[in-house]
Image 1 (cartoon, rainbow, N blue to C red):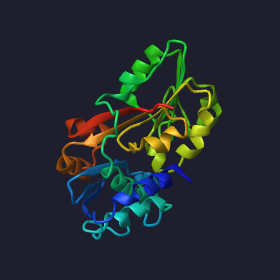
Image 2: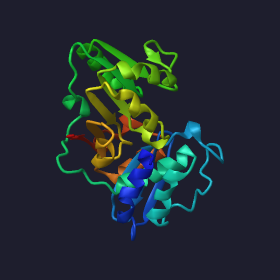
Image 3: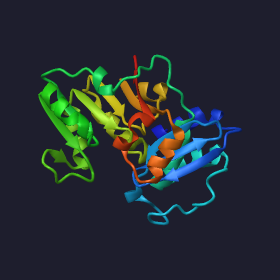
Amino acid sequence: MAIIDEIHERLRGRLPGRTAAEVRVGLGYAAVKLDDGRCGLAYSFREEAGEGGCTMREAGTLAGRPASDLASWVKQPDAVAAAVGLATLNALVDPPEGATKADLLELIDIRNDDVVGMVGFFIPWVDTLRSRARALHIFERRLQYQPGVLPDWAAGMILPECDVVIISGTTVVNRTLDALLPCCKKARQIAIAGPTTPLVPDVFRSRGVTLLGGVRVLDPDRALRIVGEGGGTRSFGKTVEKITVRLEP
């Protein structure tokens, strides 16, 4: 079962009785606020929109619908719709037991002889990782022509040689994480990071992941506004709280 489908399966029991109070699909993220006030986020992948191009085919009908309807969109072959589905599921997730209010980079074990692979361009982390590790390989679909950044398809060639791997939670949405994790068998540390990351430990622990770094939305209305006005990860600031979960074997 694909990771995103297993997350849906594990959380579907929390969906009955919940409705989507507000929905936003912006340039960088989708955000869903539930009727109980909780809010979830997921990267919107607008550049990979399916049917309907860069528009939501059912726009104007989402708010007020059962959360179970929107959550089922994780199964659609449209990355924008799947983002709305995952944002709905993320809204259901409270920080799990053992979670720490900390940036993942503070907890990940990186040694000076490590080769680190990073799938997704976490710009604020790059200098720190380069100073702590022997080598850093960055894989990114849209920025592959920048110095030091490799195309995403090269990840399968290089990740098997990495000691530490950090993968963007956005790979859950477009289902590429399922193919990436088997490439990381040598890695001592495997982390999934970013606001899209579903904080559902059991799904990832069984696949060898050692750290999850996601967020909890502290100010849902502010988060909705940021998403609706085209904001990205760095726009959230204190609207969200960083949460890191260490996954024991």
